[in-house]
Image (cartoon, rainbow, N blue to C red; front, side, top):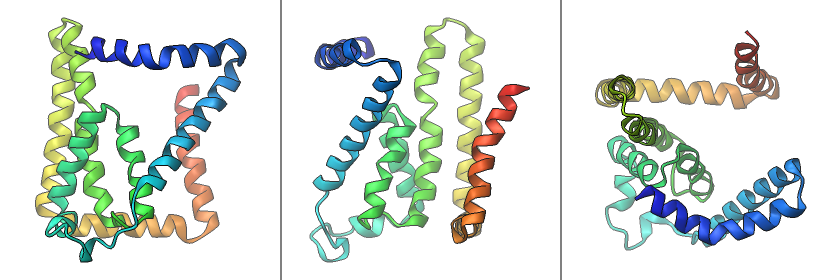
Length: 194
């Protein structure tokens, strides 16, 4: 099924990508790609209507979005459908900016997305025809699921408060944000150089 989907997508976007790569050198292709992504998010942002969810005909939907387990399942579902945790999490930016999703509701969404991001890796491990690769990915999925469900069930509110406190500290001063960004970028570079 994924091969047929890939060929369908290639049939639509292949000629466009081929045309861009024919006249643009490597780094310019990257810049064009970033521009296309920014344009896509701009279109998504403009497509979202201005709504006050509490005063609409959505009924219980707004209140459901404030329940951690619902956001956990929503994050899991969106990531399974998109097969990309990057796409799944990027959708949160316009939704949060428009007020559809509050900051504290993002935490269980990301927890759910972190579990289902392993689905494509699980499929790839099956295709490798090596039982140990499947076992490794399955153990990773189960481990992350168990820890996430324990946190959601027993200690979610303290966990949420601590994460929001850390986020507030990071964004509270430019110095804190600068240190965070250096650590975020620097640690992987140091690990790669070892």
